[in-house]
Length: 301
Image (cartoon, rainbow, N blue to C red; front, side, top):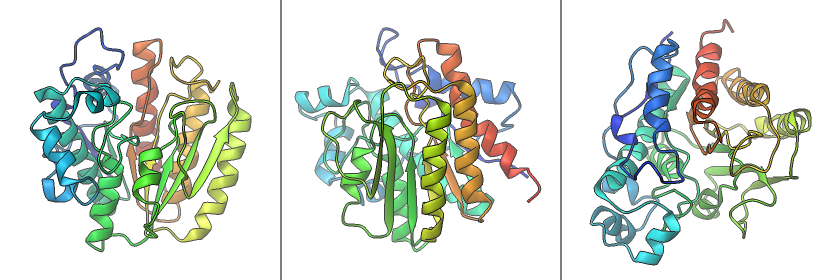
């Protein structure tokens, strides 16, 4: 069966080689997935429309991004320079998650090769997140009646505070964030389910906690899952504070994807964070999502 993966060359914005965000990972991941024969051809997204964006973000904020007129202190909070390629990237990556969510409805599993911008809220961005692509994708599905009860499984090392803020009064979307207790953001918001992890936690404890929570969540009768597969939980991540191995990340991805796909619940996987000290390792770690999605999609049920 075809495993649909969304990618666009413009995911790689021009922010300079010395920027602390590893922007080149998007282009390298696309090359790696083709080289490893995990993907044959990518589905190419279009820019997310203003109508779709403004189901989640204020028109004022969207226009200030598109026109590059956002206040300096708000640009600083995002962490990217507000240049044409960043605006383009933000629109096309959000469109990519919306496209991946539609493909997941058709194929059972689909992935973006970007996304997981979970710190962006209604009228501002933060922490390298301009538009909240998963929130936009979730709202796209519920507003069109394509899904009624969505679960966001956010396993990035940082709390998904943008999603919890956006959906705090929305009973159609359940937010689950399992993250480092002492990491960014300094002030956490309240998800529907928050699981805070102690510093330097290792594989077995991490996977036990995750499995316990997934077993409970499976009873809620969700009809769609967004999975934010951040690899900043890895022991060599610059921004991590956990001690998870490469094998731990593989097992985590398999556990999440299999839990829902076996129940015939569509899964849309997005990248989430990753700031590994070793760039080649970072690309490899991010590919775990796509590799394991493809593997599970092609398993005989």
